[in-house]
Amino acid sequence: MHRRALLATPFIATGFIMTDSTEAEAQGAAPDRENMLRMTLKDNGLVTIQLRPDLAPRHVERIKTLTRQGLYDGTPFHRVIEGFMAQGGDPTGTGTGGFRDRGFPDLPAEFVPASRARFLRGTCGMARAQDPNSANSQFFIMFAPGDFLNGQYTIWGQVTAGMEHVDRIARGQGPNGIVRNPDRLIRMQVMADIPA
Image (spheres, rainbow, N blue to C red):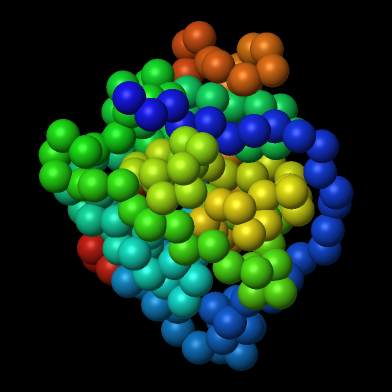
């Protein structure tokens, strides 16, 4: 089995980058609900994520497919490192799982240069093993910017609301951030599937 590891190293703070989707919303355009997720976390905390098919179409499609099949519901945030990120999406909760046994092969990397997208607070990326083409279902949400990840991990989304709920996810212990009694992703939905 492949171990999904995201290496924790020092990082540099950066500013906010306005994306095409946030620019459109700022100009009054209706949000694209097909490319938005709603996560329900503990204490009924709602988190909205804007998906980025312009950056990672295969990863966004995988996230939406797994979401629509309910496969993320109840999965733990098994690895959470203070000041870095919260990692989830592993049905086994061990950091080695994915949904290969359900017909979902690993995905090829969809890395983009930092000039197109960067790992900022609230950025959602895909976790992987050392092989860049080993992402399956595990993902992470950044607590803080992490320029050292730019061009090394696939960016598939950005938290646009509810980051305060992400900030309350139980933290892990030690340098790898393994969580003994992890919080769980209660439910994840594509916004287009939720009655308006």
